[in-house]
Image (cartoon, helix red, strand yellow):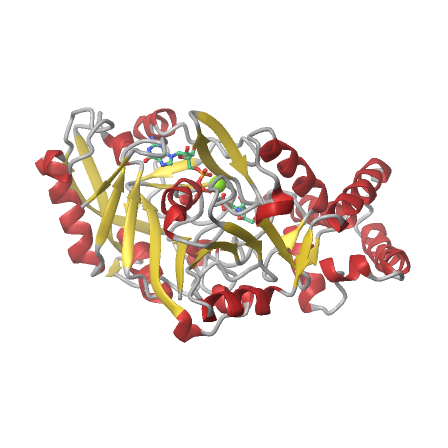
Length: 420
Ligand code: GDP
Ligand code: IMO
Ligand code: MG
């Protein structure tokens, strides 16, 4: 049996915290896509930790963690993360496994990411510059190197061959930066990676399921950044939606039970691309300040706006969401008035559908107002104590989206969550 936790917006919905919260109910926590572009924040013993590639179950004693084949893995970032979790007394050699089919991010992938963004100028994606796009391109282009290749004696030869190919591309981009230091770090980090548990991920997980183990699949990014269903081309390069679980771990669709979709009570986006409910005014600034909306991976300020129910309904449809977890409800505590987007007005016509190419249209959000609750909700543990106005806000979202908000997160802490 596999349950899934994934993002329903443009990422940073609070997936890390939510995975950490549910982890004790599972035996295996498995990341199925993305790479070091992700930044999942958790609090362990009151201390903040940001994980990029290590699954967010790593701090729980009775769970093991799998980095699935759908991930693109940067050994350099991984080594740093392993050092961080070791500082908390976690030995990843005991509780973390990596699929041999997982593709590697090479230093030249990072360089290519940077070169590509520079060439795009104002049309840049706003990539995290972690090499994600180029690494997935080498996967689908059938050139990439995988974790299992590290154990092959010809690895260095394969690396040099691919590096030369990348150099020709970098020359075309007229990319001049010296990446020798990145390569040194890389070779040091792959030595470390060779010492970790590399497994056949698809047998690992299916044999686990067959023996009754419970799996929680952890997504990165968000549904609106999905390569197929997101706001293309302003997306990431993987399937962030439920289908990504099947090919990112090697599990069959009928093994998937609950799909828990995480959404903020409002909305944010980092990087370029359409964001119909974005607020460019003081309210947007207030959301950024109160929600501390700065990227966990890049530190960039996140763009902020009201919750977009057109996009949320679409994301629930694509993912087959069975439960919605609403995070950062406490960030709205001080607002007198809240708004939700129930439609897009495009060329004078209202629609509740996501257009094929959002960037081609001027989209005006159709907004519905709600009264704010104007009280501190961050210490509430009992659902009966939630303000009536918050319940009305959530009930409307449930009804509009056809969803079921099962949990409301009311603070970054591990225990700040209310089951409704
Ligand atoms: P992820 O990428 O989806 O794991 O989310 P990030 O970690 O990038 O960003 C979520 C941020 O919100 C982090 O700083 C969390 O500590 C914080 N956070 C998560 N849930 C809540 C919540 O319910 N309330 C508040 N105030 N902060 C939260
Ligand atoms: P988590 O898992 C928010 C965004 C980037 C950029 C676009 C493409 O923490 O929610 P990429 O580096 O993937 O080529 O960038 O996607 N992006 C994210 N935004 N949260 C993330 O991950 C993201 N990962 C990528 O800002 O707009
Ligand atoms: Mg994040």
